[in-house]
Image 1: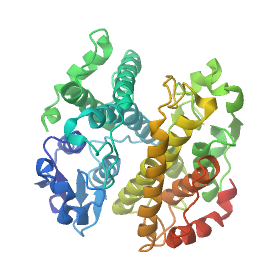
Image 2 (image 1 turned 60 degrees about the horizontal axis):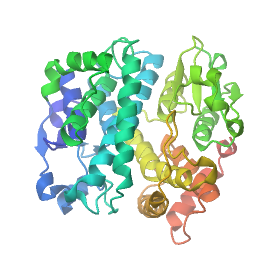
Image 3 (image 1 turned 90 degrees about the horizontal axis):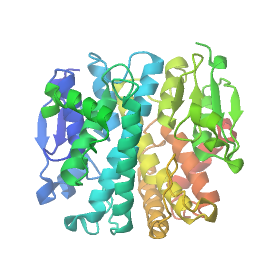
Length: 215
Length: 215
């Protein structure tokens, strides 16, 4: 299947959509983009809910109409149809390690930032969790998110004193999610990398300089 | 690599470890188990932290000593070295769909139960999130977790009125995580499947009757 038969529903401002756009840019392919207007709540429209009942971006729609939601699932599909350069590992051990590290970055970093943002933003009252169901904000989660982000930065700084990239020796999807996390934390949660975390900052400067970072 | 050179660090009572044990049983292989005594906080010991710095089970240790944490990463490794029967899909589209559905079950179901349990249990005061860092319990999360579990049950009951298994036509890792979720919710969070969700209950009876369910 050619990737130009795919469609990626995205939003320019969505950090989850950016993870996928960077992944695609690293593959040196182009997938047609369809913008979902989150500002006008287009993700909650009947037409978009028919594509993704969770009402979130991104969604990758295949040539046969199958809709793939969830970033790691979209990564998996693209890696299968465009294997090179490998971003999810090549050996069994590497595939497992990239899965582990990409997930750890997401759960310990990305999700912590998201939880902070969704529980503090006035525009997200009653929408503390993404998806089709409404949940009230819990103010105590905002402070806890700040602690989690601080721990994420410290733990991954320690990691990057030992290895050049998040999952080890090579650039991978784990670096993509980590880059998106740092930029999201910086822009939306006022939590840039603390100056003392020099290994993390050096890693950030290196991956942010890749052409894909502008995707 | 033979699977008998692997070691799975687990705990009999850990629902995350059970996900992996069921996956292994479905593969019809045996992987040597090493029990981590969570009751005596062995997961926080220096020796276990050297294996898994997140101080959680399960961890799969490969023959060369590489430690793989995080359930989807362990699934990925085992699927690579024991491809049959496929539990993560066979075509690119299936692989992406299983990744999506397994993840949705985890985030919408399993993680909701876990959040409820960790924020209500007296024995987990100061340990509201798994991992190396201490976080205080937030009582408001307990009620929100109950709402999330109720929504999970309703949403997946609707799904199972249309398809026989969580990810579609065939049994997959998504069913394993869903089975572990229902049993965890029932035993640890007093949240069995509501009687009105007959499609979900019929699916549960079917997968709980597989020999792997006793793993």
